[in-house]
Image (cartoon, rainbow, N blue to C red; front, side, top):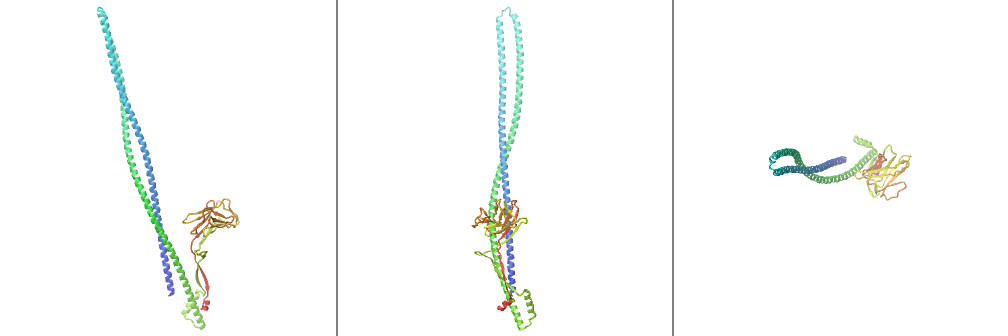
Length: 460
């Protein structure tokens, strides 16, 4: 009955342990999912920042293009104004030529009148006898003068009209060309104006999109902060649950060890009573029954001496404290190893396992943590470690006497606490030459004391 009860308790504890392990695994899976979600949010936030930067660059380019278009528009307006001034100047020149032609015509008529009056005055002075003679000559001279004057006037008029028509045609051709240029410039101005309006609308649209994206980025940042806080709370809650589960597992382990002690004690008492019964039967010379023989033979199969388990924990300086399980290995081509790591973080010891000197100048001793930052110590360039000797690197806050040949870790009062620590030794080429790991794990030792059943029987 007692054995059945013990087996039942063992099964119950085993099932509870499996259930706690499953809960722990589920918590770890949820934590990984949360971490993956946070990573995806960070990636999305970086993409939004890149998109916002690209939009800002596009806005700057559009502003530069707008300034160039405004400069072209100003130059075109200046050219249009100069062409209009040239047109007015040509029209003024045409008007001046017309006025000069009219003035020349008036001057010619006045000269004709003056010549005619001079001839008339000469005719009046001539004698009446010679009047007929001179009259015919005067008439011929007048006709000749008139004819010459008309020919000269006709030539002058034709030359003037020809010059006027030529200048007028040139002016009209220039005006047509300027009109074409002005219309082309006007069309280009209208096109530029439409393009400027389009670019302005696009710029406004980009500014609106920029504002929307900035708002979205801020919303995403707030959402990310809230989710980060929520997940941090959940992670801290899960860590607390894991700590509680660990403490509960340690408690259950202690209960299991106590039950194991009780079981061992009960087995020893049963074996003692069986041995006593066997002694009494031999003394009374009674033949044991077949069932008793079988039970006695099974008892002897387990062995006469029994062990009683007694749990013993290592004791520290200030009371009971957990022991540390430590493992170490060195690279095959390295003669220097990490010999010791102080559990209080005061020092780290390197040892030369060969008989020859080992130059350690430029080597690095690095203490790596899973949760905290690394601590690195660079060995001086001229340092040489003799064969078979050790090098102790003390922390600055060790508060102990430093022996000659030892080194001090400046800037750090301690090498750090012992909790899943990895200490490595790197050569100048950053190759790992030695390693030592320290795991924080509570160990229990079972101290066994041998007691013989006969002795127990005699004591009884």
